[in-house]
Amino acid sequence: MRAGAFFAAEAGSATVRLTFQPDVAMTKEEIAAVFERAKSWPQEKQEEAVGVLLAIENDEYDDCSDMTEEDWAALDEASAAIDRGEFLTEEEMKDFFAKLRA
Image 1 (tube, one colour):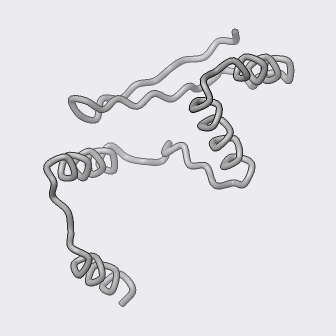
Image 2: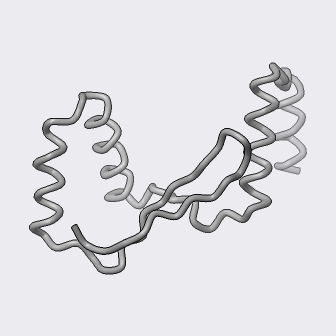
């Protein structure tokens, strides 16, 4: 396996983000080997991998690498609010988007 590093950032007590940043590009043989191993993964993991690959192919994949710590903190707070059952009503959402469009 080629050299590289996993980077983790703690954004909350239960949230850790990991991204792999290889030092060099993978060879075609290494990519083929990963695809071969993926055939033995559980169906759910295979579907996730295919989804990510199709998103990359269609230029729809965002690895969130441009997000700031403030962005991650806002997401963590939003997630905590959801966990607490704090949701906007449909009317509040309509008002919110109306203000954005104005």
